[in-house]
Length: 208
Image (tube, rainbow, N blue to C red; front, side, top):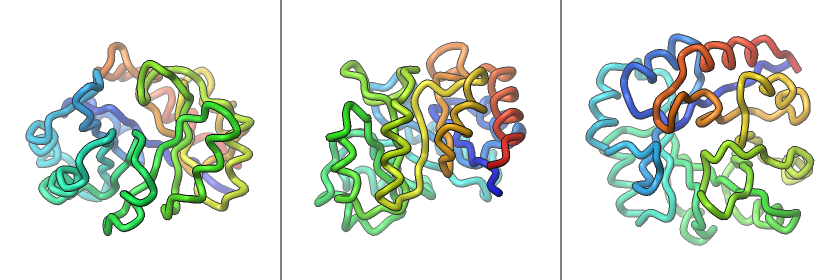
């Protein structure tokens, strides 16, 4: 029997980060993609990190960033995991030398064929949108997500997860982790305390 892990992503301020921790988040996500509405400057993230416990893994989200810059930020901020949410190639990532995972925007079954090319233990599966690399609130194709399990990687489900569908999503997909950003926000980069509490409470009550 498993209890789902939850990553609250797109955190931009200390208050929301502390709430996420208090409500039971297992991972904290910080978006270093400058074009994202949830972008956080590394120096701001560093200030937040000084005021939160060190035992909750911090995930840095990057999109098509220069890999040396990624590594510099990861080292400076002592990030625990790197999430690549862009068009990064297997050749770029497979020799990175730090813990990382790749996000895939599931446009069709063809997208699934890319998964085995990446030498990471986890994959994040998100909805496809031509407008953005993530955080769109669009629900991922759960049938494709289930099919991706055949590659033997641990699944992080993202895309359109909110307090209303979190229990259904967990039971339908049975992923290792759920990644939530827009589904617990009152505005991009600003979390809604009640939504965050409701989602985490419901999620932790589902056994599978």
